[in-house]
Length: 412
Image 1 (cartoon, rainbow, N blue to C red):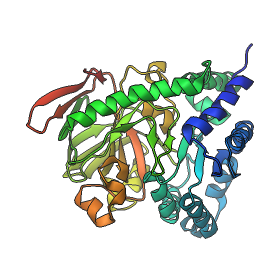
Image 2: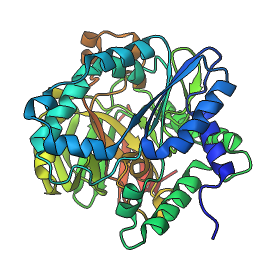
Image 3: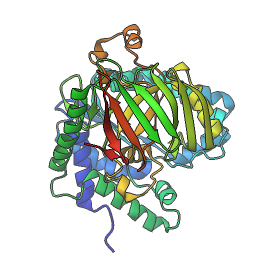
Image 4: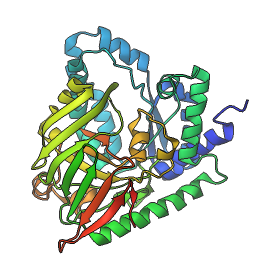
């Protein structure tokens, strides 16, 4: 039986992360964050980075088993602490223009049974300590990208009825398809894909809708879009003018909502893996932008802790459009990994908005961003709301209603 990924496909993946994901420049520092199980891919990424002229490549591994041990056995006070040295290092790397490649392959059930207060406290401590580092990334001051790697724990969650070996193989096949690393020239394939996404963002930017209206089972929601909002998708230039792909794979075009202009109820359509805890079957009710009520069939306490992170956690920071008839969605697989699930479904995000999604946003101070309806928060958590039954209308500046989505897909 042929095993996946092949050596060529793994080489292609590394090249894609370096050349399309972060577009490493001569003399640039590269920071790679990855699970220990992805060491083979990390080595290839490191090689590709140096071939592209990287000055130095720093690698930081994480181990889910060590994380689990800590959450079950460490003293309570540990979870309100975050290593100051690491926060400063990440901030310095970003400030000095490093490129960040993260291999994101969390175990969806890693922290099942752990006290939600511990998880929420640790997440807030990390978000607070890393806020300056994250501002460099969300403001596109430098290059960053997320990719994934098929780990046994993740694969067995996605394919629970398969043997571990079979589950890993099936998950790799899906990753290979979604990232196009089986094609003769994956880099060129991604350039063509980015061009198609650019067509959709250009169309929406020309429309400049003032409001979006969502209707689906359990969902009836209106979202105002601020004046000067910008739709983005696929490849984009960072502030140094370097073209990068923050997500591989990606099928979305996205912008920001007006902070106080969200009203109605929205229901999730896929589970959300948030810090190793699954939140599923949840609904959020908004009034003047703020979540005023919620329910969840699974993970209600974790959702409560998430919403209570800070004031901005109850407001939206992103609205993203993804057709139901798209490659990842058509696999009919729930990935329990937001990088994949969000690119199979229209989604929204609680928390921080990207300043780059409003005109001159990266030049504004906090007061100006607030005035323009740009939400601020320690969190940015995407959740999926798309399905075959979803309809979305856009309201033009002169009040006309136009179909954007019908039956979960583009209506034009």
